[in-house]
Amino acid sequence: SGMNPIPDPTNYTNTATPQTVYVSVTDADTSCSSYTTVTIRVLPNPSPSPDPVDLELCDDNDIFGP
Image 1: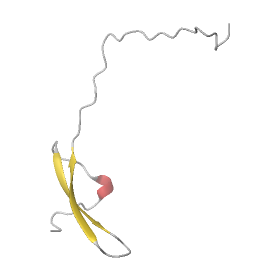
Image 2: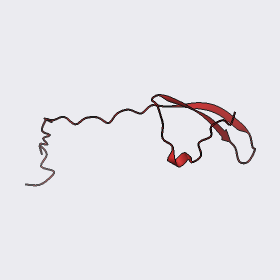
Image 3: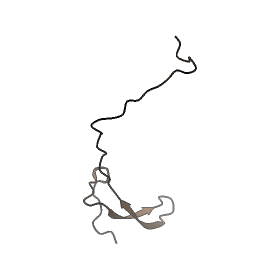
Image 4: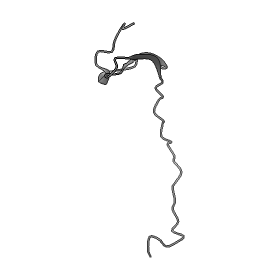
């Protein structure tokens, strides 16, 4: 319906999770429009482990030299 357009799509901040955004896409050549929704889900960043497991690599094929 053209209600509440996002003034600057490059500077959009979502306000809830999940959040449904209504989208209008218009073909520049034909002026045909299509409408749909996009659901935005923002997941929290993972927390690092306070005691991570050591990573080890064995050179079984001597590919890294002596």
